[in-house]
Amino acid sequence: MFQPTIFVFSFLIPLVSAQCGPGAIYQASGSRCLNVFRTASSFQSAEEICATLSGHLVSIHNTIDNTFISSQAQKYFDGGVWLGAKTTAPDVTNPLNWYWTDGSNFDYQNYKVGQPSPQGDTACMQLQTGTAKWQTTNCTAQLPFICSYSSSVTPTCPSVTIPSHCPSGYTWYDETDFCYKNTVRFTSFNDARSSCQADGGDLASIHSANENQFLVDLSKAGITNKDKSHSDDVFIGLVYQNSKWQWTDGSAVNFLNWGDGEPNNMDKEWWTSLVADPHEDKNTENTRWNNVAQIDMRAFICKKAPLH
Amino acid sequence: MFLSFIILSTFLPSVVFSASFPSFFNESAYETSGHKPEIYQLEYSGGCISGYTWFSYTNFCYKSTARAANFNDAHNACRSEGSELASIHSLTENQFLVQLSAAGNRVNSKTNYVMIGLIFENREWSWTDGSSVNYLNWAAGEPNNMKHELWTALVSDVNPKKGQMYTHWNNVNMDRQRAYICKRAPLN
Image (spheres, rainbow over the protein chains, first blue to last red):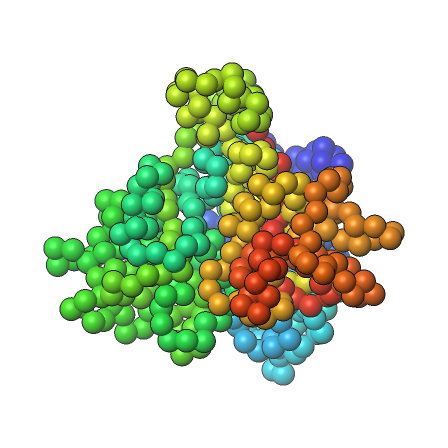
């Protein structure tokens, strides 16, 4: 089962890949490789095929990429093609109900007039290559599709990406090559940090939007918080000390993701939480950071290096 | 071709190294008692893919995803990653999954549970990953409503109105639950 598939793709893509193999399209922004498949498939089958390339159905985050991907796909066919966006909520108009299969934020849309329209329990997204507009479709529809994978990965040699080893209870993240653990326990910042240090790690630092999204996915409860407190957020390791924000693990502060209007109340809010779930009163803060006073919080995230 | 060979050869020692250690922690605990370095190394023997959490007790990889999904959605999502909805074979494994998937805040809706892979099919309960049903943990009075509640959820948070359900299982219908757990073997 597994072997024939690898053989087929090995035939299509040489063992040594400069950037992308022949037949694949290099997407400079994001250093991604795109493969366009004419074979009509359901959303699920398409995603599974992309997984064999160590990738996912393609996601789109800005107009430039949308135009590029549409024009590239149009070279192969005119019509609808799967994107990697799906929702299982009735309200298809709320972007928060959608997700990209590659885990990135659903932060850009380019709907055709009259879209999106409900499709029942679930809906998936298709791109019209001719117009570069999007529309919702039943997930079982048979459409061509586009896979996206990192150009730094040689898809024909999956063994190259042997995962690093994390201790029991920790989760490896390949992009950073670190181990993370989300602990759901109502606790203070100091107790959270002590707990991480007892494990040989520290509270998590965040150095990119991708790492941020990974930690959101790791720690979110999947519930919209109704009250206004931030005790339903998650502690990370950013503290205000010596007149500046610093990571407790000593790494450089080279990425920031404050919510709108944050940080504020600098006379007492010297610690930082990751807003992993939406708050009804502050929707824009979801997935971003908020500085807090000395309060207990629902959970905290530890980060430590793996043993290879 | 040549470059690829070099890349592969540098990884082979890692594979050999990993394979030289026993698979199960309990088994090795007796053999390595008192030898900290070896125990330390064993604690790191998980080889889970990105996003998955290794549990030494079972030597499996798990991933809890907090995204509204019914059984079909969860089942398909796990399989798209080469996994299955999680099966549970001991109280220890059950408690690990409760911790892994807990929300940690007020949970009072009947769809705020976590999908696992137990389904009622051919007049019996079975795990979608094909493993045997050798452990059950139904909440008091469950399973019930067998006409339409053919799937199973783990109650990983305290519901103030149904406290006795916490950490136990409840059979559910096709409504979307708050989260689901995938399970797969490590790569090495």
